[in-house]
Image (tube, rainbow, N blue to C red):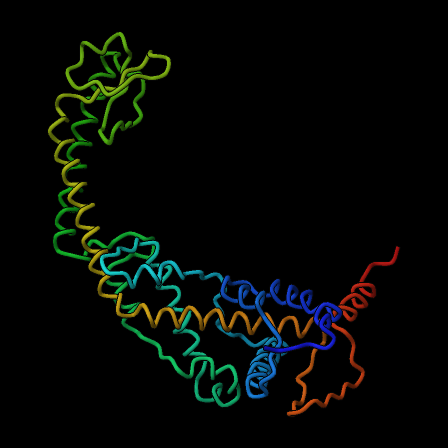
Length: 328
């Protein structure tokens, strides 16, 4: 355990305020939590790596170079769920998993041979991992960009959706014919399409409801309008209702199967999540270094310290803010 002299050294140096400034520079939950729990380190080899990574990212920012950083991914729950037997992820969750895998793909692509040699500290973050192409490929086979399961995800789903398409067109033609007939008779209160309890209904004036054969599904608040499912469409509505349930069951089966097939990558995705968060943490340190005009120090073992024209970061920021304030 590290001991400080005096015991109040960290409070006097306002280390917690510096830590808060760093936390504000981080964007991901991973990086913000890491920054908030930051402590003093004494191992030279650890400190050198951290400083090198920060210095390299700072140089990227100074030169306006692009680095593929993704900072809004908080997928701890999804990754944990993916690794649980019998779990099922939603389409939206798979798109977030895909976004994480895509972030790693871009990071590995950025580190070509030249960049790996120029930024050895940043490259070392991904030294012990690899990019797995199968994660994105499997998700793309099943899930659309809009978050829907693709028709071709299974032959059964394609057949169900084709049947639904045909039945919906058929009921639309029948329904339009009925509405036109009732409207001509002066029974229809609203010609706009309406649904109640998942069934297609026609809105008629309440005084005419007994003149129309079908199932009454409800009334308007004023009770002047009644919603009736015409007798001619009951069979078609039943078929559509059954097909929609079959579609829902097939989608659940497909997503369960996709979850199971990707579950083997849960540990790797956990590493991806930490890696993306680590780069966000590094960029946070680099941005703070720019704000306080920090430099890459030379380290050596032992209790020796030599500061040249040094200034406390909080005093520097305070002075800079005073200078930048507009004149009254």
